[in-house]
Each structure stands twice: as structure tokens, then as C-alpha cells.
Image (cartoon, rainbow, N blue to C red; front, side, top):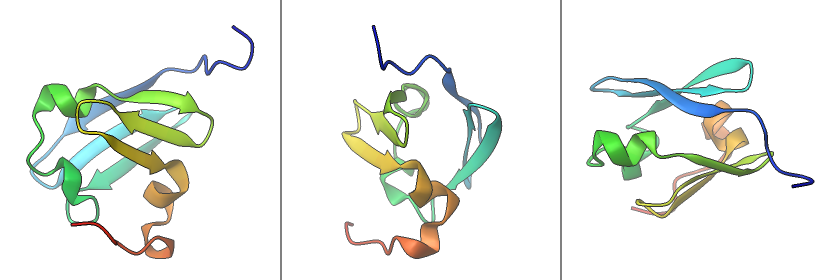
Length: 82
């Protein structure tokens, strides 16, 4: 299908403080302190991540949408939801 993301996105590890996300050619850390929606999620829910658009990630079981820039530069995206 034209325009589909072909690179694999995967969670490469989970710690008590957050999880590592392998995205294309880089690994990003997603800390629970800055992304509290994942704190009480199951391992299965965190591992089920979709990459529907080039700059967008989605966790369907958690109904969490994140712009990749918010992971790379969380200081530019103040937390507005609890």
C-alpha cells in the first residue's frame, strides 16, 4: 500500500522507570514520569505499538497517541492530561 510505514517500531525493553522504543535507526527512552499513561499498563499493552504515520505512534489498547517529537523533546510538550 502506497504511503505505508515499512520500518518496524518495537519496544526493546521495560524498566521500573520507563521503556525503550526502537524506532527506525534510533532508540528512545519513554519515562513513566513524563508519560504517566504507561505507568500502570501491562507489558502486552506497552509492546503493542503501531506507527500509522511518519511522526505518530499509537497504543490501541491504551488509546494513547504520541507525536514522536514529544518523546524526543518532552519539555516542548507540557503535560495537560492526567
